[in-house]
Amino acid sequence: MKDFFKNVFATVIGIFIFVAITTAFGLISLIGIIASLNTEPAYSDNSVLVLNLSGDITERSKEDIWEQIAGDAITQNGLNDMLAAIKKAKDSDYIKGIYIEAGLLQAGYATLQEIRNALSDFRKSGKWIVAYADVYSQKAYYVASVANKIYLNPEGKIDWHGLSSQPYYIKDLAAKLGVKFQVVKVGTYKSATEYYTETKMSNANREQVSVFLTGMWNDICNSVSADRKISVQQLNEYADKFLLLDEPKNLLKYRLVDKLLYADQVKGEVKKLLDIDQDELIEQVGVKDMLNMPQDNNKVKDEIAVYYAAGEIVQNAAAGMFSRDNNIVAENVCQDIEDLMNDDDIKAVVVRVNSPGGDAYASEQLWHQIAELKKKKPVVVSMGDYAASGGYYMSCSATWIVAQPNTLTGSIGIFGVFPDLSGLVTDKLGVKFDEVSTNKHSGFGNLTARPFNTDELNMLSLYINRGYSLFLKRVAEGRKMSVNAVDDIAQGHVWLGKDALKLKLVDQLGGLDVAIKKAAQLARVKDYTTREYPALSGWKEQLLNVVNPRGTLDGHLRLTLGSYYEPFMFIRRLNEREAIQARLPMELNIN
Image 1: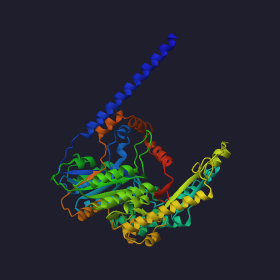
Image 2: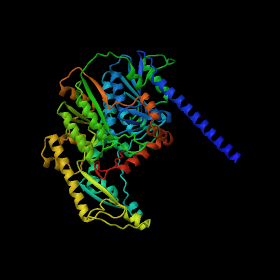
Image 3: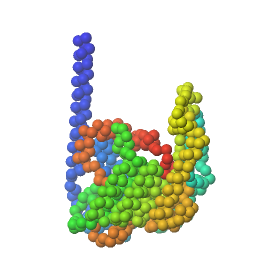
Image 4: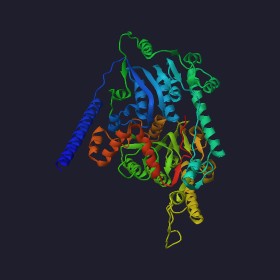
């Protein structure tokens, strides 16, 4: 017995020492991160802005201590900070040019178009842009092609292959498991339900995907053609060559790059542009440093609020310990919008929407709150990569809508998918059910015991059709169109931004900067500041959150799962998704 207590005591001491060491290392990491956040950069009047075009580009930059400890933060770029840094560099006497470090870039093409437009505007100021990569992904090359000079490693590659979307289907897998799906939908093109019920694309879905992929690719080729002086026909021929495995010298011959150089040689070219000796160091300024660069601050009271609404639309925040989410949580957004409405210093609001849609009920609540906001001050929607279905629903009541040519929008339709698990539970697992009910539909919704009967499916169909009719009515009111006219272009059809403009679903093509200028014009203000909402948690708030059990568990999960954290959260959100959805007709992955 004495040995037993010795072992228990030794184990407890060991655990205590392990926790103490882990905590100490964590605190050291946090102190290092905090110190780096407070470091003031040095500036010279012959500096270069370094733009890292690799990893994921999110709508907003955020300082996430857990991600920084896990080592993932370096691959996260905020579109907001990148655009602000490019604009500030254009006007700064310190910055002579931009050096693009390109690589494997992950972002939607509307986001990339926004960055590319900002770089094009920078170049028009007379300053230069130089790009270099060991490997250019297609997305990185699309952005980098705006540069004055494009350099590639002598053994480098360019991935230029065109666009493709490859949806997958689980009907046969579900059948093997004994799972069936009961589907109710409105809209010929509302093809999200095909994922559950078909084994290939419907003709209608194939048609719409082909149209918007072709339109998007044509825009990409036209942009690259204009800057690289290569015909669109040649660019398509190169895409068919499987360019990724082509010899680098051929890429030079195709005029896709200007020179094949190693990284140190490219720095030599930059030094020539800066007119400095080859043994001198290049004064490099990062995006964060650029934003911290001092400037004249005139006190202006009037404000244009930029409110970011990105992610899937849900009504309530996720329950349980993993509650930190990247969704548009309607109950939170509605409260935020009410606060903006009651702030007299805010003269107009730009709502930045980047969403494939989601919960139909939540989308209606967001529509209502934006409509109420519009009664007091101008509301301009700026659409990102997606503003489709529920994302369009919440947008259509705005005073003015701005979209990028390659934004995916529209998808006006509603569907419901209900899994019938009785085959899996009863036939495969051998679990039997019986039922005693007081009324005809008392057992409604228990899909592990039985599927919906005909009467119940009819009721669901009526319910979803009412939701679709309301959706049409909301769009008709917001866009000043007849319900029939909206129905003609609805039916779940996905449109590119440039086509949505012709159909009067949006008012103007452009990015966030265009939306902000329009908001100021509508509010009749000339001198104003912009401020982003909702406020992001700084490192102090995140440190305080450590005492919150949810925050601690979520942080540990991030550290443990690393890059697998987001897929885990996606599966959890899928499990919690409401049955009635207003969202894009497929999980789009355009490569």
